[in-house]
Image 1 (cartoon, rainbow, N blue to C red):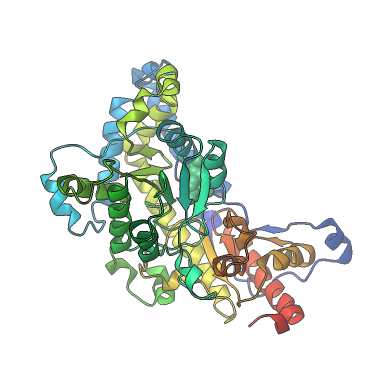
Image 2: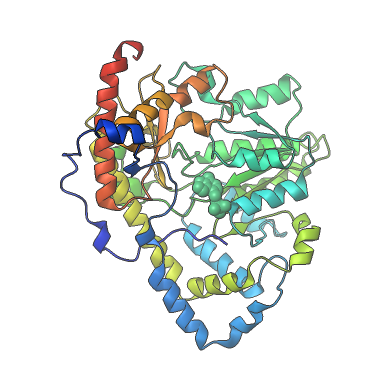
Length: 465
Ligand SMILES: Cc1ncc(COP(=O)(O)O)c(C=O)c1O
């Protein structure tokens, strides 16, 4: 089971006051060694932000509570009942202010439960299980461009054919709303042109990795309806949904009052539309019903019941029951809530720190700040360079001359070899992680990144616009 990652101390959280004086370029000897001094590539949580003290508290509490003895044994396939109850209450509490639009009326009259929890070992495990239980080799899965760079490999390992969803950035040379699915074109290709729908679609609707973009409520509803109509399993990777930064510190960057904008609800809520869809024979002509499945770390799957009939699940008797007991304690004692709230402030401040440094450079833009949903979250800042820019070449230059590593945009595009507009647009972007480095390092890394960019632009300026 994976947990969203925590801050406990404030000592390492002070902003560096010397980020305007980054270290000079490395010497030629260092250059040959390609020393990485600053790693903005790795999407890990910072070591100091892990829940050390919370885990100690939980372990001490467990010593005096024999309920954990049971968790040394096999457990229920979907996860321990007490954990599921605690998790449901936690999720309801943390998402009660999400925007559900008119779904809320349908949900309140729904008698069947279309939201089921299933404990997994994290998102990757959840994706693997969905592939194993709901797909056959040769089935198609359509993914966004760009996408979480490790997900396509999970699909391919299961024999699935990975194809691209139509994207807005396909349309307009380099300046489309990057990371935005072109739902009109998706519908047109299937409903008008007769293209067979895929078995599955994989999206990251909240605080996307890598773009940081959040889908609007309307986009979510249209995609969910498309999936339901055409018997598609819409897998929503909502690993960052709870990790948003609804704090004041970003307001001046976002050009709006962050706190006044509701977060659109998770995709699984749109399963309520299924009730209406099944009552309408024109919608369900293929006789198949699609649905939305949310996978998340710490670790929820709102999954089809079929998962429970899978041999591997039957045999292994529930995922990580002992860890599940720890997490139940974390939820029941409200440690997880406090910890998550600290993290949200921490990441908002880290984002503001990075944006403050980058804002001095007009040739670098941060598309998520202009996204239609003015909320930010997750681990990454996606930056866009001038069109025609190669972030791959810049990465090599940056590591060799400045020791700064980041993720070049093309790494997040499973179709990177093509020379289409989306591909070109994605290759002129980069993903910077705000979570991994200490704050002081993050400030120096960003300032050095900027220095590297300016120096690189002097070399390539004529080719970029
Ligand atoms: C969008 C996305 N999905 C899934 C994962 C991996 O999740 P897990 O560690 O729970 O398998 C990550 C980690 O970076 C991610 O960014």
